[in-house]
Length: 105
Image (cartoon, rainbow, N blue to C red):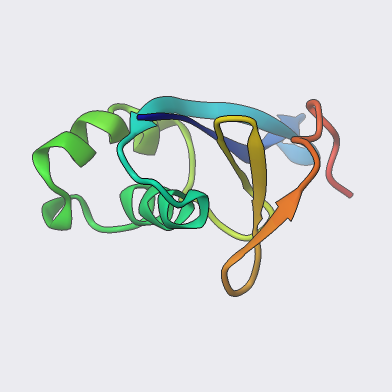
């Protein structure tokens, strides 16, 4: 089992206008997959597929995620153990680390 953490960009509104976007830890769970990119693909499925297509254990991982965050998408991050990946337009890009609550310009 590998530890998995999901980090997504979340907008901050001030006076009704979006003025900043911050990286937020959205979920943490364990995955039985062996290959890190396979685990990232599984995370993408869990956080993007319609709920009726998910297995019972995937729904448990999802929890309250959809009420608080948008889907996992480009420029969001998945951390598998100590390895970090950025969601790219197609596939995953391995990165050295997850940015710390960085404002997205």
